[in-house]
Image (cartoon, rainbow, N blue to C red; front, side, top):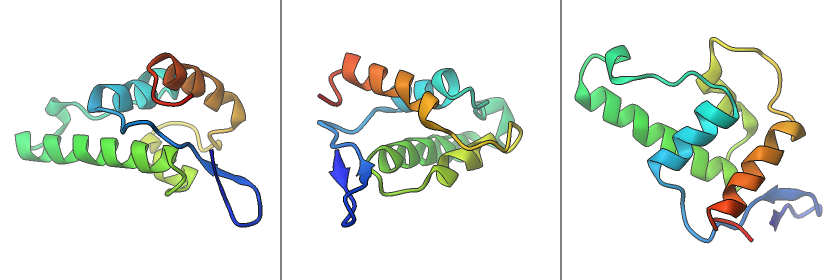
Length: 102
């Protein structure tokens, strides 16, 4: 893990960035966030931009470069609750299984 200057954990040291499929799995399947589909977008370009945002946000969030709010913003139609530690357990297990973290 990377650490803040005050000694608190900041984020993970990833062996590699997640791909889009992995990022969407974390958002949709592990965090329960309903993701936009191509039918929700005006055109293919908007859909591709949305996917790039998902990918960039998840990778930066896992590295500790973004706060939880950046992920919670995708869940605008879901609960206002914080992500919480219990949500991180399946994410850590998934990242370890995929060899993305040690």
